[in-house]
Amino acid sequence: MTLGRTYGVGLVGLDGRMVEVEADIGQTLPSFVLLGLPDASLNEAKDRVRSAAKNAGLPLSRRRITVNLMPADVHKRGSGFDLAIVMAALAAAGDIKASGRRVFIAELGLDGRLRPVRGILPAVMAAVEAGYSEITVAEANADEAALVPGAEVNGFSSLAEVAAFLGADPERLVFPPQIPGRVDSGTGESAAAPRPKRDMSDIAGQAEARFAVEVAAAGAHHLLMTGPPGAGKTMLAERLPSLLPDLSDTHAMEVTAIHSLVSGGRTCSQLLRRPPFESPHHTASSAAIIGGGSGIARPGAASRAHRGVLFLDEAPEYERRVLDALRQPLESGKVELHRAAGTATYPARFQLLLAANPCPCGLASGKGIDCTCTPQQRRRYFGRLSGPLLDRVDLRLQVQRVSLRELAGDGCAEGSAVIAGRVEEARRVQHARLKNWGYETNAEVAGNLLRGPLRPPPRATASLDRAMDRQTLTARGYDRVLRIAWSVADLAGHTAPDADDVGQALGFRQQGEAA
Image (cartoon, rainbow, N blue to C red):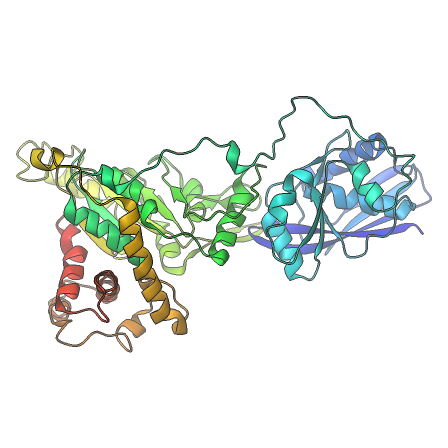
């Protein structure tokens, strides 16, 4: 038999597609032909495969080898097809047994070692979903691949081990020697230095700001904090993740899949349970925050913050087009990046935190007598935060400087653990209330539900209705106040928002409009 067949997975964003790898050995002069729209890195597999097979004791045939990657009209990219290609060629030569519906995902070193690849988790998820449960990967990727329910994962360190597993003659095989002191690129999460723990008890005073952050955490609301430098805006933002509950199995799988795609070869042995926190510098480009790059676009900070927090400090310093690019994912919870090579879709359901000074010099708070900025400079500064973007931000907060009395307090401020308990209970109540409509948090609820089955009594919404009549609120703003009111009510243990809950929510919504 001169035809071998194996399977691999091609990724476009987080979406995987099964790729059938066929290898045929002809009768003509030696050559290696790779078909199926491979990219440059995949084309180089021809030389990697030959060297790896020779050094594993299974040199490829000296006749013409033709490898076809199907479907042939879809672009293939990356080194993750190396193992599938060499196993198809060895099967065509009769050096190994047919592998059936087994999927191979690994890069080959010239010495025959199997190297880990990025994106192993979404690739294995796609294979299992398509009905291919038998997966062979590099040993460094095995723990991560095994996180997918239903996957039967075999991890190997070398091509010779894979060939032996599939019935190759053991006397022919050559196993690469161990390299003393070698550090594999597939290091786990434990290799990273632990991040310092940030707790809400570190914040002096700021009772209103602390409550606003608690409300944002309870309902997954977006938040804008405006105030002078040193007021504590960054400290509050960095401590929001400590109030969020652990991710569910489904959300943890989504977050870990994104991490797998952008980790640069590092692997993890367990699902990422804590909500991520991303804080890009204000010089970051649109591609860095939304996603981009050559070929298939890669995820940006917005997708890396999926199910977590995206914090933009000094928000007016970002380019306006970068900020406005966030408007679509804020509404849809995903990012679609269109390129000539294909369209990549990444999840981006994050909480947006914006922090800004009151003016370019930062001294316009209070009486503002020390501020040297002209009215035109102030308008230009906040003009980068467009109206449509701010309209999507639920909570707006004026953060004042901490007084000496607050700074010298007795240090009895609530810690994150206590507040997180209230937030978790509020999330539990929300889930029970909203699960029949397919929502999980108040921030996601559609306006027709807020103004229909979930509408508070008319007495509770009187102040909100007056604001709408005076046209100080848009229709989107009206719905967002109702969402905040439900979060305030959930924290207070109310079965529905009352007039105080709605009034507090309206105050949070309108507080930053003067800026």
